[in-house]
Amino acid sequence: MQMAEFLVKRDDLRECRVAEGDAPEPAPGQALLRVDTFGMTSNNVTYAVFGEAMSYWDFFPTAEEGWGRLPTWGFAEVESSEAEGVDPGTRIYGYLPSSSHLLVTPADADGSGFVDASPHKAALPSAYHRYLASDADPFYRDETEAIQMLLRPLFFTSFLIDDQLDDDGLATRGPVIVSSASSKTSIAAAFLLAQREDVELVGLTSARSTEFVDGLGIYDRTVSYDEIDSLERGPATYVDVSGDGDVRQAVHSHFGDELVHSMGVGATHWEEIGAGAGELPGPAPAFFFAPTRVTKRAEDWGRAGLETRVADVWHPFCEWIDGWLETIPGEGFDGLQSAWTEVLEGRVEPKNAHVVTLG
Image (cartoon, rainbow, N blue to C red; front, side, top):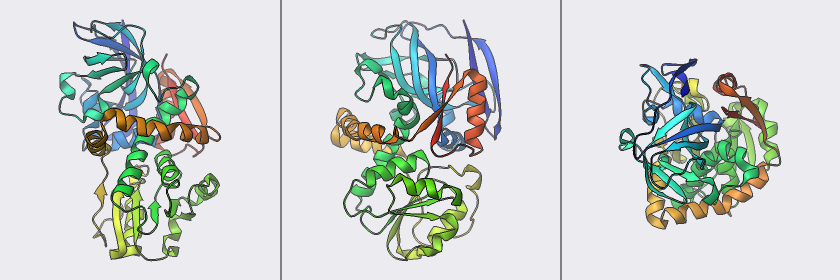
């Protein structure tokens, strides 16, 4: 059986290619997943930009030196299995590579899914190890598969951002200012924060996206990046989804020591990370690493309790976003390369999102 891998040059994300070879045969205790379909958003760019620093490349290693398989979220089917409790034909949701197949070593398999106990993943964050059987997944609805692939991982991160801001008492200590306000992570976080009382939300975005962000109806105010100085000075919290150094510098300089907290989340402006060099006034930015928050809340509530809480707010979010989100389908590895390029270059309109089917 043949397999194909979509590879990205680690030090030049614009360079990519497809490599072909033999698909691995599952040994006793292993299973082979056939990757079916997944979403492609700025979240995937963040994985690639921080691939070395946060070990994202290590989840799906490749023999090709200097190249990496993009981490994605989507659906796969168990093609063959030598693992107890993992049946061929089972539809699975989880963390998948930009490849036609993935070899896993299932552990703790039951009707809900399994954990991939592949040795190379042992030192990596456990939040990415779980593969869920769709039949038993409380998030799953057939009609919202596309939204799940695109937004479920982002929504989980957004849920944790909202949770931490509330838990730390930051949500009501002045406005919460969210950069890249038109990005899906920002939209989901703002959707959740907007449900809380006494939360003031300011969306920072490009001039071309202000009308779209305004029309979402979840931000109290929309401000373009060149209008940061128009914000009233006082206590505020900055949620940095753009990763843009110039924007970060502008926010910190404007609020100075009155900035209560600066949370680094993503890198939608991935080429501007190194911009805005120099000493930052106010608090040092703190990088938000979702798996750390998952561990805390899983200890507080239990893993099932955490997933139930997220599912309870996920379905209303799906209903809301289904009213305006338009998916762009892509087929095969040509479709994947096109989607990756569009996302990487920031050419995707906020109301659109790419879904790739390898089939």
